Amino acid sequence: MIKKIVTPVNVIFLFWGLVLLTFSESYPQYTRYYLYMSILVILPIIIFDMMKQRKQDKQNGTAKFQSAIFRMFIMAILLVIAYLVTRQNYL
Image (cartoon, rainbow, N blue to C red; front, side, top):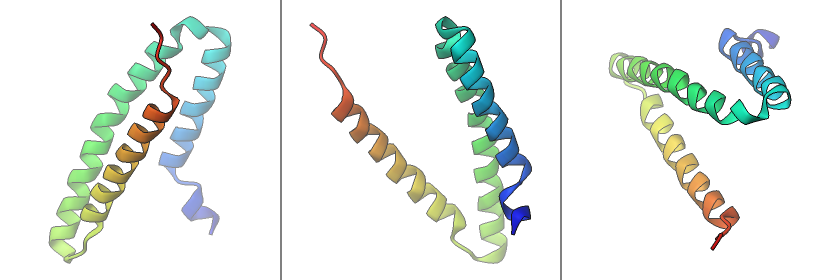
């Protein structure tokens, strides 16, 4: 049971978040650049994982890739809605 939760990817994301917290407390002016760097690092990992899932789906006849794409689409819609709700119009 614990083996499924404590995976290398989860540990990496945990440390990435802890570094973000300490970095934002110590150097708040550079937090934006740390987040930009995070996006640049995570995008290739996501693309590689999606390609791997697509290959596995073709070999096994499953639909994990399609469900992952749908989850990403739903999250993108929720992020846009959250942005529109919390947006403030500064004039």
